[in-house]
Image (cartoon, rainbow, N blue to C red; front, top):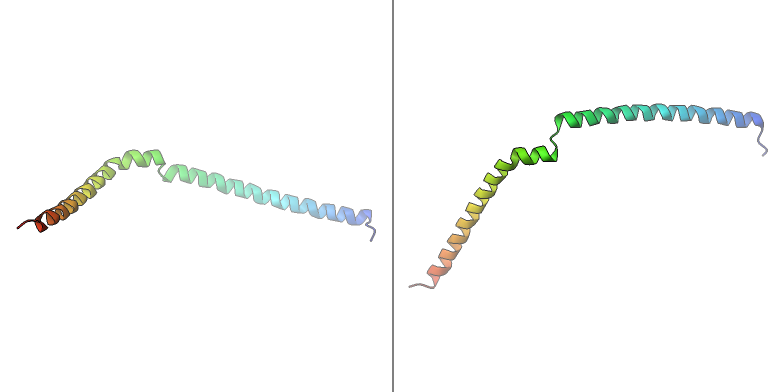
Length: 86
């Protein structure tokens, strides 16, 4: 099937329309990504902010968990020691 110059120009015009449509979609996507970046910067904590703001809470929780574990281990040790006694 030989292709004519007219059919090639029609295909080229169609390709140009598709390229223009895709460029428009890419521009919209870029705008949405920029908007998302600004929202993330504005509303979400960074890792460094999270670490500095919640470090005291983390230390309190770790201390409480440590106290509970120490109590459990002490109770187990007490049980083991008294089993061997009178």
